[in-house]
Length: 104
Image 1 (cartoon, rainbow, N blue to C red):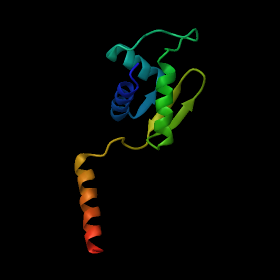
Image 2 (cartoon, rainbow, N blue to C red; image 1 turned 180 degrees about the vertical axis):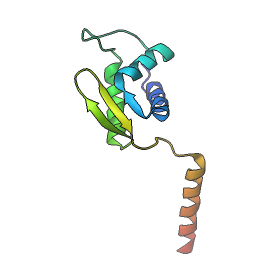
Image 3 (tube, rainbow, N blue to C red; image 1 turned 30 degrees about the horizontal axis):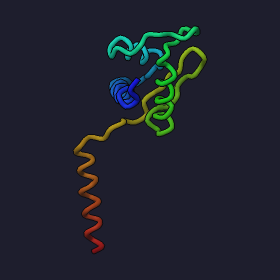
Image 4 (cartoon, one colour; image 1 turned 45 degrees about the vertical axis):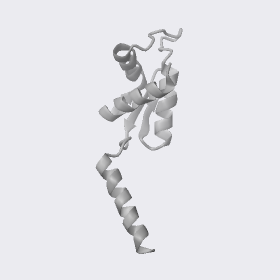
């Protein structure tokens, strides 16, 4: 399993969904991106723990908030966008440069 690729696919899924279920996200990755459908004896996909690990990382960074966590599934709500638009990034860098020139 390519870690960078799965993180990118999870980012895309999070961007297009407000509510994120770890089980639904696993199903999406299995059905649409050909990830393994192997299951643990609990019935969860083996992909589940990699998905949870990354969703928790997004939660700690403030992008997601945990809505429900139990032994069957973890659900999150999107709090902020992952990516800024290019125009916002350009605008910020221009403003920063203007501030720097005032002090030269």
